[in-house]
Amino acid sequence: MTAAPPPRCDRIAELTADQFQARLPEALQIYVTAMGYPPATAQQRAPMWSAHMQRAGWRCIGAFSEQDQLIGIGYGYLGAPGQWWHEQVRRGLLSSGTEIGDWLDDYFELTELHVHPAGQGAGIGERVLRQLLTDAPGDKVLLSTPEGPTRAWRLYRRVGFTDVLRNYRFTGDPRPFAVLGRPLPLEER
Ligand SMILES: CC(C)(COP(=O)(O)OP(=O)(O)OC[C@H]1O[C@@H](n2cnc3c(N)ncnc32)[C@H](O)[C@@H]1OP(=O)(O)O)[C@@H](O)C(=O)NCCC(=O)NCCS
Picture 1: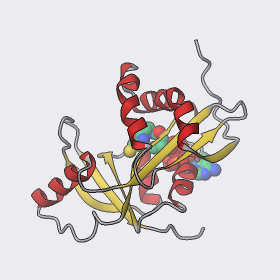
Picture 2: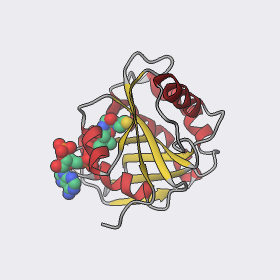
Picture 3: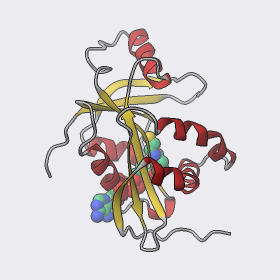
């Protein structure tokens, strides 16, 4: 039995693809725990997360405990036509009659952001998010999140994300999602 990671964050650091690959089981464990998904979801997601590392503009930030355990993770990459999420969002925008504008050009897709429940509510997610978006490629960032109110929603609003598409149902998931976005770079704090 693995001990729950301590909530104190010792450092926030960028991970190379090799470093992330080595930490993948830990990262997926945070993901399923934070999202409340069945443990088997971790194994199912592993090939997809590995494939994402090969995408242009991939960038990953981790939060680490004093014992060097991963307690938070965030990653994303440059979105592009042909990618599943990109095509889903395009379909959603078109079907809702929303003006696509340049939302789907030159954007960084914030794909995953999770903090282990033992470490949530102490500002770790915001630190990971801000560091991930600092120096992220693209002139804007887009993400999707289940409709709130949730801690994730408060975080995204605090960091300046606004609505791109609301109450959208991605193929294969019955939950309504919001697509949120904001320009890059982030303002200096
Ligand atoms: C969403 C998530 C990544 C946010 O990470 P987090 O570390 O829990 O949250 P934040 O960094 O926003 O922490 C801010 C909270 O900590 C509190 N806090 C305490 N000390 C703080 C500090 N020094 N700095 C900032 N916030 C601090 C704030 O008051 C705030 O509380 P609130 O959200 O109740 O208003 C995390 O909660 C999570 O993994 N959730 C489940 C998975 C999920 O939904 N992921 C996103 C899917 S799109």
